Image (cartoon, rainbow over all chains, first blue to last red; front, side, top):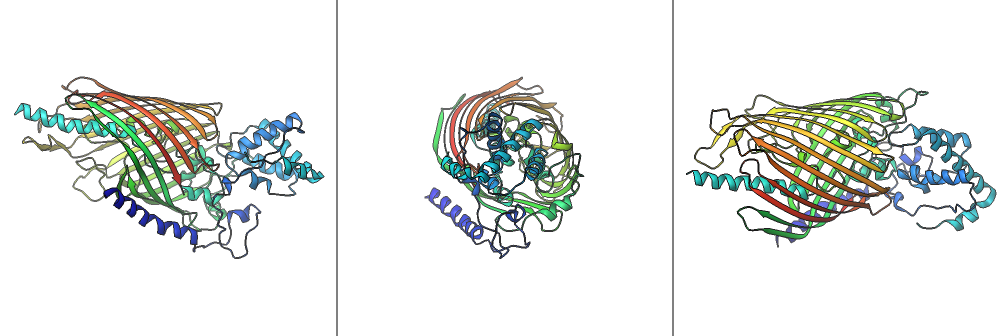
Length: 150
Length: 436
């Protein structure tokens, strides 16, 4: 009886909190994190409710056709970048130039807990450029086939 | 009379030891605050190795007033905290509130104590259900943090162990903050080995065990705090110092949350040096006093005001991002009286722990820890050790790391520092932490 009371009271307090999160009525600034990253958002200015994009299955690329140095970059890309970011979100940025990729990757190297040295950053950059070129050449179709849920 | 005193002393100190035993199994309060992950579209592992263990970035995030540490390079000047505030995304409830930070699990344990029948307990329970509101006040350098506990250690218990606000300034490279309110002494402070959270469900015993003077490091007093942080380019080295002045403890060991007749305040100091990658050294010191009720419930009960002293050194070394070696030492020295008005010497303890965490891959880790408390009271029953062996497996059950499964085992064997009564406890715990 006591346990039932405990549970019911806990849920009684938690459910309004959860509803508040879903409704999410308050917003006092006009820009979301996704806006800053260049992702699309509805024009209303309200925060987009996508709390766990990071939980979706992440893309995988077949390493069969990759040069060895690119393969190493791909492994580091998954390990280092994927430690904090959804790889799908990173790869959703089209038309990134090599300089832009270099800017992003070397900036990340200077973040706390990124744990990347220069050689690793270069390897990740090689993979990012190779991947962009492969997709631009139309290998994106093959790549799509190679995608698999981990 | 002496027999009666011994009985009561045994009874009371048995309870004290049971408290220590309880903490070897009970999970620490959770502090994963998933609204921060939602704010930046980052996985939990951006700030935690595995929830709730903070990494260097999570540590800095708190010290910058809950703003994400930016890249620091020699080519670019370090951004100011005000600039970081301007770059923050839209303020919303979902990125400032976490409604359900919970822990559901199964525990089984058996305790054998000299002079008493063995006791066993087991069961499923909601270990914790906490809600957090934490973040920044839009367009200002002010920040706030509240933790509202609904369920603690399986029991309905409404509590607000963290409720403070503060202001941060300076630059990302050289920052400072001041804060006031009720705040956990060690939460979010200290390098990896000095944090109260670990991959073992319970914190190191030296943080959790209550001394005979009813003091423990794992507490949330009310007070004011100031901190300074200096980071090198790329965060290869971080130096940080934090000082707090707090009310301290009541006679029963509970936190003194308001005005009291105790004129002196307690002082806590933490100095950290992180050296990449994810390794560091911490010096910790606490100095204060409290009203201690001695011989509680007996005819010779009296109250005196012991001085409480704690000094500790903690260090960890992360090898190849795979194996983390952690160790800590805490020295205790509290004034002690057996007879009213007659100084009786000291309660002293030399407490250690050593821990190895092995990250098999991101989101999966094995951990093992050995705790050793060596406690003595002047003219008492001599040095009394308590040893605790614990092991645990942690696994992220989602890619973002917001749901974590854990299984832990603990075996503790020790003697009470006052009565030398021996107690042994083993226990297993399996739980799932859910952070939303």
